[in-house]
Length: 334
Ligand code: ACO
Image (tube, rainbow, N blue to C red; front, side, top):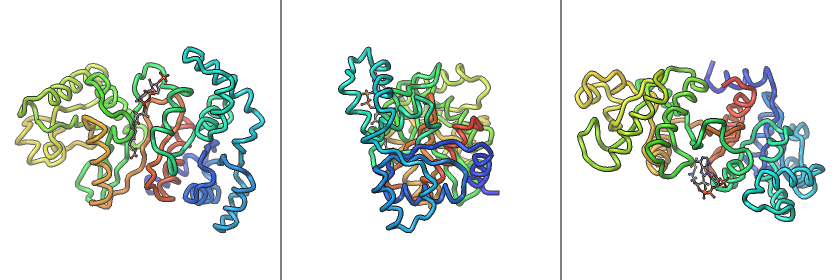
């Protein structure tokens, strides 16, 4: 069975409530209709109920009637959520008046529903920039215990099955943290190793990418990756991690042997950790488009609740797939 079909089957065994704050956005509505037709999660749409109904009728989406629709202008728990927001942000001086304004924003309402236990996970970003989706999550849901930095991993499904694990690889950070320190990069590598085991289901061989392999170039950017590799190995001795290493040495066996002889990861890497968000984001999009790979994610790592962000260029099936992952995270399957 295909990877994503397995995820849907697992999610349907313990259905979770996934909130989609962009409830009037066409791809989101189409995805919601598919999810409700396939029945692997419950869907909460945020949007004016009349407008949601009209849009569903216009697009011919019969199963949207099975969704719970929440009006951001007039939510029955608005006052209680605003009180929670003031409590959480009291150190930042948030007033009740400001909270009552913020809670009408669907992206804030979604995270407060999760915080209050009224939803189990969120997927957004078809219509909103990543920063706008993430900031409410960072501020109110926050990171999981012991984690300082949230990052985003992509499960890349390549047509060329020679790479990674029968064509499956994990790339990170491709979505969140622009310029991590060595410590943060080490944390991202460890989190990505854990995501790989939990979601992709194979044993990670992690390459910490750079423009240098094992000291072939000297630069502070190289030092950062070498240092992060050392720290990541200390943080997670159970994970196989190699660095700093160039991308060709990471994934092509002959080049790996030449540039990093004796390495058990060089040439065999199935997880690529990029030194900055710039490199990770550019790389995943190029591989997705030029190699016609499927890019599932970003799966956010390190958040205290399952909240995942889409690229604004996403397709309907990207949304459906990310909801399947989010529902599994919410069910504790990964
Ligand atoms: N992990 C955990 N917490 C974080 C992180 C992080 N990576 N980054 C910021 N925060 C916290 C801050 O500590 C702060 O908490 P506080 O308000 O309780 O003190 C809160 O989030 C807000 O932080 P700010 O500094 O106000 O927010 P910032 O301006 O740094 O924005 C953001 C954070 C939105 C993630 C920013 O780093 C960003 O825009 N990243 C790029 C996202 C992006 O555009 N990705 C590419 C597109 S995605 C795609 O193509 C799939």
